[in-house]
Length: 108
Image 1 (cartoon, rainbow, N blue to C red):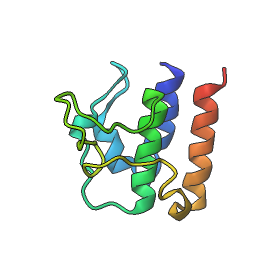
Image 2: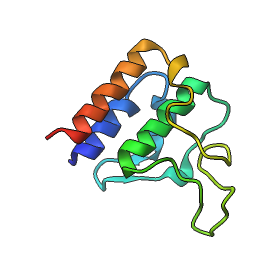
Image 3: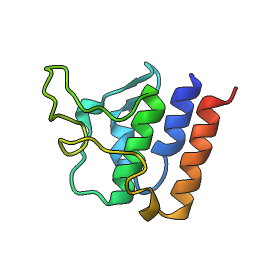
Image 4: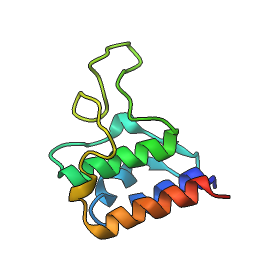
C-alpha cells in the first residue's frame, strides 16, 4: 500500500469523518471515488479535514474545476475549499492527526 493511501486511511478512520470518507475509499485498488462523496451538512472542521484528505491524496490544492470545465464546480459545496479554512475549529485530536498524516505521507 502506498504511503499516500496509508496517510489517507489514518484520516479516514477518525471518528468524526469515518462515515464520510470510508465509503469512497478502495484501498485494494488504491482509488478514492471523490465523486461519490456525501458532503451534506458538515461542520467547518469536517469540511477542512476532507479538504486535507483530498490534498494529501492528490498533492494539489482542492479542485476548483470539474472534468467538464465548469470553473464554478468543486467537490466541496460548489466552491473552492482552502484546507486551512476551518482548521481552527477542528478538535485538537483531528488537527494532530492531520499533521501526523502529512508527516507520514511526505517522509520516507
